[in-house]
Image (cartoon, rainbow, N blue to C red; front, top):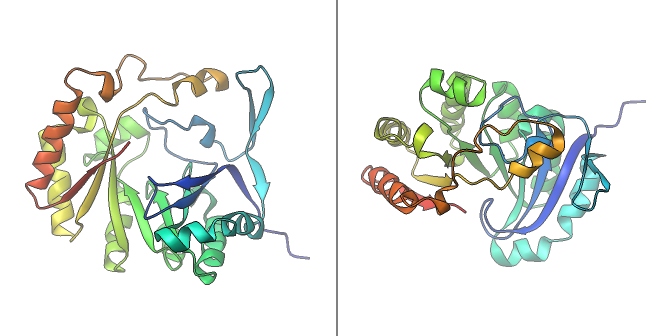
Length: 265
């Protein structure tokens, strides 16, 4: 008997309006090869279920094994919201490519059920796996952390070379892509990096970019997991006196290249 395909999911979030078009259900998958300094979901790094103690001191399990069909049934509960808002399902993480077979099957089930599909991805993984996933993905929310491969490696633990190569391959397929940037002025908000990013987008016909200002919403998770939070000395942009100015300057620079710039939450 064939082994039943299962994936590890650590959250299914309903009624999301920040992870693609319309009202969406976001499925968060465990497993990620990147170690971004600003990551707000350290519980997503390992593919395996984990535990921590919640605010009441109770042990909480992070991650549960699901069959794709089980997740589909949860997603279908919100079909009326999708129908009226133009929404659908978004796979997030972690990194969906870390559970590529499960992600592809779930996307296929949603696609075949006429549910709009999107994935949030760093793009770091094998092209053949991403290519298979792309057959059933309507929209890619694709992260660009930094354009310089050495700096990207220092910030995330991996090179951006395969990330940009995979992005170019998705563009050649004609996929709908929105670029997302976790925005930290000290790390990737320099004029040089933003201009290189904008030039890359213009050269490849990409039109929309979302800047996601740095926050510390995941800081407490690190302590619960026994991990070190690396950016505790950097204030969230909304608390910085120069925060609004930094965001406005970056937006203006990118708009000068004709890009549509959205400031995320």
